[in-house]
Length: 352
Image 1 (tube, rainbow, N blue to C red):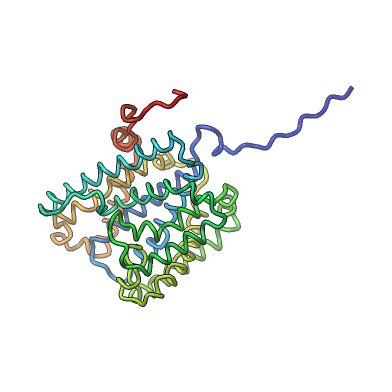
Image 2 (image 1 turned 30 degrees about the vertical axis):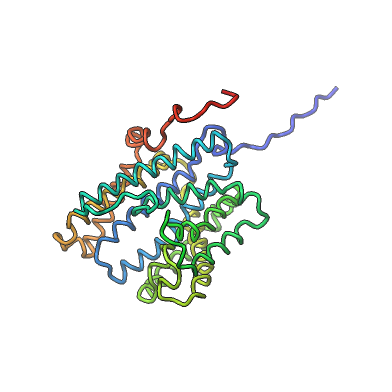
């Protein structure tokens, strides 16, 4: 009797194998954290039209792309006890520690003794941890809705015309960036595969090339505050209806540039792939490296740093610094803050 032939099993991607990290996502996270640090370093130098254009170009997609990835990696969050524990230890604890650390740093390094320590008023870059905590905590709600992205866009549009939201936890920014996180929750792995196809790369390159001269044209005509999402339209001296319009326009433009960026991110393991696992360290630490020269008056003392060659040097130093901060040794040193166990603080579940 003829034996039945075994049916071929679908190949499992390396990224989906248990315990394996996705090299593509780690590569993207590292490259984005470098762009974040470089863009932050430009805030202390004198802004020419070309510098502002590059600054706006990067700000249009670097945080949206990072937030989309965070949403994509939060798809499995359902609020189970171990996930809530990870939310508290991996996001809430680093937020508290670094919010206090940055406040003390500002108080003494910038000679600002009156600078208050407030967990409700995120300083500089800690807003992202507060936002990520809120976004991830509401993930089950977004997974329940039939059309989550349009709802999130509606909330962002309403926030953009509401100046009375206040500064607590930088809620204006939390709400205006919300659609990118919700979009990440809705993404499926095959969508990322489409973006990474070879035939997509040439149009993506042309899009990026066209965005640069457009940014140069729009630089003197547009306030960068629109890209920060920290203010309403009225606070940016615009009509109230400009808020929703800019919300939808920037959402579309940011998504196009995000897709173009991701299409050129390597899928294979690179020398910097391992650094993608330490981007939380690079993000939280690079603020000290960015703010210290500013507080010390370095850019006022060494005027050549404001020249084109100086700006290139500042960019390279920022990229090098954040790269070192993402390395495994730094990650191990900071594990007690960024990945604390804190078993003493939680009750054991029935299974334990």
